[in-house]
Length: 244
Image (spheres, rainbow, N blue to C red):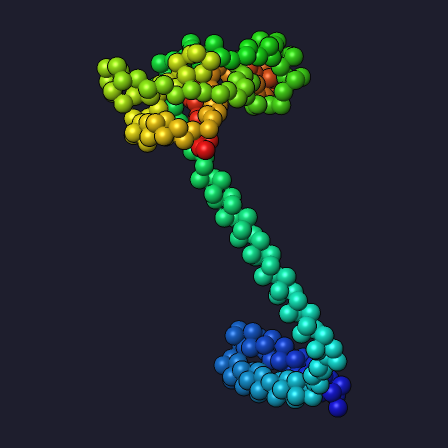
């Protein structure tokens, strides 16, 4: 019975397609033909819906024999999921507590301390490479800086005699004054210093002179050539303050 319904459905689909083609043809002929095929499509759509309902009504629904086992398995999965979520929430809370013990600050006034900052850097020998050696050593447009800076440990020193801000706090690396804590953060940092809440301070330095190369088409030589270029970025210093 079900196979005959499927054959009838396929036949109706074919007649429906034929009707749609008729409508398309009727658009360019006369209106009588167009109305006939529209009626044709409507009738076949209604018949096709009836056949589809009969097919669905004759389709048996099977309940699994091991429904209870599946229910038990599902409950076990849910329990495991709840345990995992609880574990993740615990880890998240621990992570938040740890992240609350770290503060990041940008150092102000570094543009006036270029010489002091450069004295902390390690000169990069590759910065003075010839163009040929530079191209052989680095990918195109990669920035190569004149100085590289390892991570440093920094110190904070209050500067009450500062003529601009009596609450100023100096940032010092290896006995070199490289900038100040931003004025808006000074009162907060002073409280941390006075309460002995700072465990350690890590400093990272970025910027300086750099160079790179790029390819360009030389119309005179009728080929791609490599061009060197250089520029400079102001030094910037970020502090990672680890609290007790």
